Length: 226
Image 1: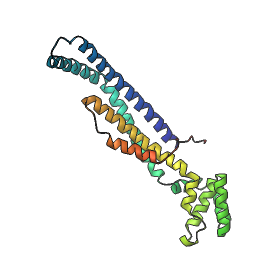
Image 2: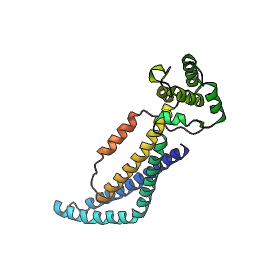
Image 3: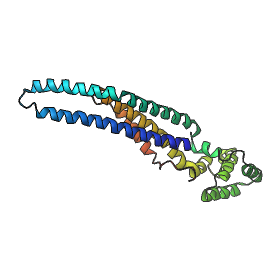
Image 4: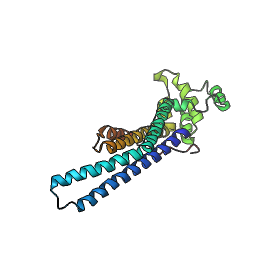
C-alpha cells in the first residue's frame, strides 16, 4: 500500500504540473490575442480574423513545439503510474482477500487456529465481536477462515461482513486511490489533446469515472502506521 500511496502522490503532482503549464501557455495565447486586437480596430472583421489566426497559430505552434518533450515525459510517467496501480488492484479485490492475507503464516495466527479449532458458535460470535472492537485483524482472519468452512445455515456470522468491518474502509480507500490515478492520467491526456488541437474534447467518460469514485465515499489512503 505504501507504493500505491506514493504513486497517487506522484500522479497528483504530475497532473498539477501539467495543468499549470498548459494554463500558462493558454494565458500567453489569450494575452497575445488581446494585444493584437487592440491594434486592429481599424480593420474589417475578416481582416482582423485573418491576422489573428496567422499570428496566434504561429505562437501556438511554437509553444507546442517547445513544450512537447516535457509534456510527453509527464504523460508517459503518468501512464506508467496508472499501469502500476492497475497491477496492484489484483491484490485488493475484496475486504475478505485483504483480511485473509493478514499475518499469514505468523506464529500467533497458527496458535489461534489451533486454539479455536473446536470452538462453538457462541464463542466464535463473541470472539468476532471482540476482534471488531479491538481491531484485531489477525484474530478476525482466523475466525473468518474457520466460519467460512461451515455450511451457510450454520454460520454464527458472515465472514464477509466481518472482513468489511475490519478492513472495508481501507479497501475502499485503496480502490479510490487506484481509480484516482487512472482519472488523473486520463484528465492530463485530455488536457494535452485539447491544447494540441485547440478544440474542446469529450469528457463524459472522465465525469462518469469521477462519479463512480465519489460513490465509494472513501477516505484518503491511510499511512502504513495508521
